[in-house]
Amino acid sequence: MIYDLVIIGSGPAGMSAARQAAELGLQVALIDEQSQPGGQIYRNVAKASKQQLDILGPDYCAGRALVERLSHEQIVHIAVATVWKVQKDGFVYYTKNGKADFVQGKHILLATGALERACPVPGWTRPGVMTVGSAQILMKAGGLVPDNAILIGSGPLLYLMAVQMLAAGCKPKALLETQTFSSLKSALPLLPRSLAGWVMLSKGLKYLAKLELAGIKRYTGVEQISLHGNENAKATEAASRVQFVHKGKRKELEADLFLLHQGVIPNTQITRSLELAHDWREDQVCFAPQSDEFGRTSCERIHNAGDGAGIGGAYVAALSGPLAALDIAYSLGVISRAVRDEKAKVLLKKRQDALAARPFLDRLYTPPKDWRLPQDETIICRCEEVTAGDIRSYVALGCTGPNQTKAFGRSGMGPCQGRYCGLVVSDILAHETGLSQQEVGSYRIRAPIKPVSIGELASLDR
Amino acid sequence: MFKPLKKKTDDEMVTIHFNDQALQVDATMSVAAALLSHDIRTLRQTLKSQSPRGPFCMMGACFDCLVQIDGATQQACMTMVQEGLKIRSMQQNPENLQDEAEQNASETSGSETGGSGQNSTGADT
Image 1 (tube, chains in turn brown, purple):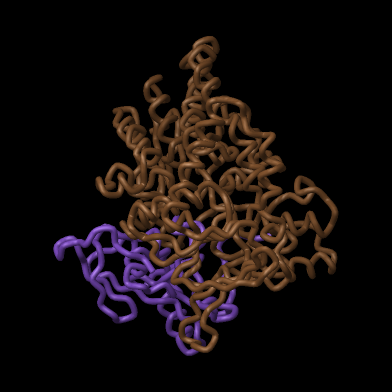
Image 2 (image 1 turned 90 degrees about the vertical axis):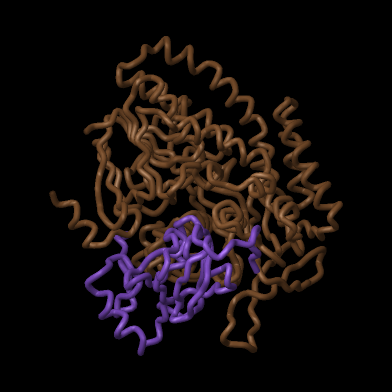
């Protein structure tokens, strides 16, 4: 059958879009990699225990309503399905239970969310170094809490995670924060004089007060972070120490686990593979696919909603999903333009209010220069173990763009396909060549965007 | 390094095998979570420098938790545990490489087990 709408990703944007589209009478297929809907932000929320919900807090619990609203006869949820190819003609190929299959939609909505920004500091590839987001996923879906851990980087998630760990009875050993007093000073004028601004600010202050009360040591304006193992014991090369500079002094702390975070960026793997138009977003220090207020991309049949279209967070994503669904229903001739605009009015207003706090957050937690342009010996491409210095040496040899770095030294050609190094490579090239990131561009991404075996491919034949 | 939020009962657990070591793990976990719950964090070595690697992103994006599960290369964070699951770390010592390459040559593409030390996943210049 041909669905009216195929949605890829069942996070807040995908789930809310599915419901809105179904209510308008559209036949919807919702495809997602996980067994439970929710995306990473609401991972496992429908199955979470009372204990997990208490620890993770009300913002996480909010996802349950979205999951419940997926029960609708017009919505088919295709779970544990890994999408590896999306075509402009509406075909979406995926692998499920070791077999390849496809669905066809008159329209496609990409709701593939965000990835954590790469954290290329020396030693970040060691076992025992993970992202803050990954540790939070383990709390949501694995029932595991990080113990004796140090949180490193910047962004609201760092504080939220620390507060959740406290609630779970595992006090973080320390927070090493990269933001400085001057980043706060430059962000303050952007603080919205609105309710959204105050809600956000008071939430943040509440978190900080909890951390203070628990006696968690916070080091701010931290520089020159590097992670080290016990070099004398060759067998355990996992990280056991972090070195850093705080207020001009070199320091070292020991821990069992090091959690890195420097904000999130749009997951552009599918939009890049479709060669949709992307823009460099200086405010969010990332590329995002071009999309209008309804999530329309440069391809007529493809919409984009949620963090994959630019970082706005879960609440904004749950507003962008229905907006895209309304526009898709309009373009399929199911509703009139007037109905679309009427229904969109409230959603647009809510989203505008919610986004008012974004410029402040983006400026305050902007990634520091030495994480964007790492020192030469730091690995930036985890898969192929290419260093920042390698990329610079390619430039010296005449390499001009991200795609050429692949030919020079295989960066971005490992199994992750540039998901983590892509932005860093574009940043380094822009810095070395004096061009803008927009001019330098990004890796070309080709299907399959996730590995697919020959056997799986063969199962398509029917 | 990770503590369980709640102690599970025996019938909520399954037995998995990691490099011939039998482990009792929570039946609702991914392979990566289950191994981390036993403080096992090194799941493979890289092809280029034999550096140790383990779970990093836990959402199927980084591919650093690749392991051999029942003979096929899989992401440990994207695979749920099952009773009796056999998991092997991806050692890239030359002596191990030979038989692993033979074992997997017919089973997967886009994996890291190619004998030449190069992998291919469809990404190309």
